[in-house]
Length: 316
Length: 290
Image (cartoon, rainbow over all chains, first blue to last red; front, top):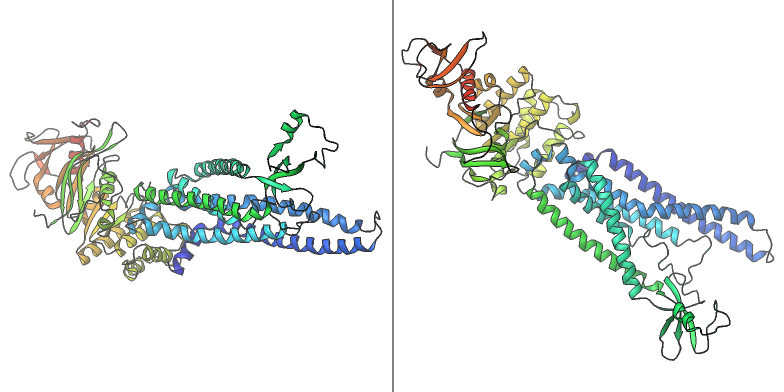
């Protein structure tokens, strides 16, 4: 593809591309600023705390901005979760639907004998934009996650803010983009296609969340309590682990057996240890790879189906 | 007509939409290489459907079509390399300039002759930097024609490009088309329901009515082979169809060579010939092909 083809595709996207591009820039710059300010303020807060007596209110003037930054950070992370879906939706649906609805497809498809080149020329530049935007948003999300105003990540962020970070954002955006292109090809009217793609996207991510959740729970393992280790873990519940056999007993089972414990919050009966059941934070990368693999696999399948569909469908 | 000469063919072609609506019913056509053929018929006669089957956009329900000997549904890629096409009511990209459209055509079809298309647009005074959305309907049609001509395809399929144009724009469009076809030796099929315009430009005439070919002849042959009886005067044994004249009289189109000395008949214009055939096709059933 030549630069001219890229330029033409960008010009076809028009205002939507500029609006979404602007939103991505604002979100990324905002996230970087929030992360930077949080880091600086937190450092000042820690220095202040080290210099005052315990229980003193001397550092309150620093903790107030930290609260504000926490709020802004939460907003940025929420936006980072939704932005890839919005990007994919509004840039993906029009790729084919607008051409058929606007009756330009007939002219273009008569010029491109195979239609494959046409689809590639329309899709690749948009795909590149979404990929770059997703990476930028993901970097912003990653920085905000790594600059927590209050909670420490002694062993790394792990599963904290799952869905708003570099690992997931670009892949999710591309998956929704290709889904939008496919539905826009099936239903070549932009508004119905947007609504359908929105519904399909919610359905896809609900299924993904439930499926991945069940898979993660099936692979959950005991995690020691009170070592800072659980901070980035994906936790389900506390259970008791038999020290001798390693067998796990849920608290419900434990209560049914009515084994007396002196302090159910922090201790366990002799021969047993209270542990978390969950997925350790260091397995975050593995699970991101698994989710990405599933989404990219679906994306390839949907993309191939779209190519077949575009080749077979009427231009109007 | 030898197989070599037939550049567009349809054999027993039928096309059905849904379960009951037949757009085309048993069409047999063979259009020879070279010149401009007018495809004339009323709305819903099946003109667009016929053209779209040749472009490979519609699959025949029955029968077969061929473009330069190629089945466009089975091998659309190869068939389309022989075809330049203007869809009905051609639309341009709103946000792209005229030159952008030429660039786009080059991207989609590397063999596209950009300079040739640009020259045609220069002849019409359409500036390259004008946005698609700011062009009039006539200018959009001219750009679409330039895009079709720029393919330098041997076949041009033009689906009612004149419909939305004013008389001057129609004249310019036809002038550009005839010049290009004569210069390149191309074959053009021009669908229209404006007979007076195509009369000057076309060599052949196909009248399509309710999905059937009612007449397929050269323009000269059609004019020579038909005459008109007014209010039933004259021999109307070979009557084709009757329709109301401008003065309220009843005109009947008959098969009768213009050279024959027959009283009560007058020569028919091309428009009257088309009207006579359309009147004959009015009674044809719309549904259910045997």
